[in-house]
Length: 256
Image (cartoon, rainbow, N blue to C red; front, side, top):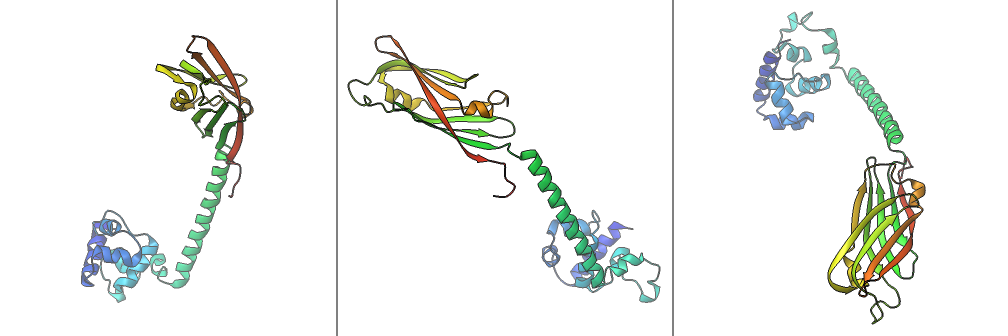
């Protein structure tokens, strides 16, 4: 099979009909780049495209395969019989049916592999508190490689907030702990003394736990956040707040 000869023949047939590569591509449902590769002898059309090309150019499939118009009296034995049979509608339907079966099998296999691989691997927990003095807003997001922990807001909402009785602080430390591990700890230094509620506005936290075993699902239900600060008198004040974890999403369903 001479691909270069076939390509030149396809280009000749296209030009005889006065259509561009783009127009031919649109007619048969492929890209212009694919048509170009056929005409340059870089690729050979699949059997389903052979049939379409045969219809568009009004030539036999065997003519395309041989790269030239063949005298009908000499066609016998020139090309394999199965190429000629492809012109029949019955053969086309069989090919399409087989393709549909293959696609369905692949889709089922993909769904099975995806479900096994990802079942319950991805989760999202929202974080909050029921403490009267401190409120938080955050998330723990699972994926297959890591756990992303985000605390968007840590607010001081005690009854003394905004009054003369609100603590004035020099520095503070935020620590997130489970019942087994310290997950995060950071000290925030303040250039000038500030109220506790104002200082906490800078306490946005985002970090990743790459080690999957660092925090388990059971530990997520037993999280604590510690807000420790040095007041203007130099005294250490410690606050331990229970964190409430609520599961918002889990990839444990096949269909949603």
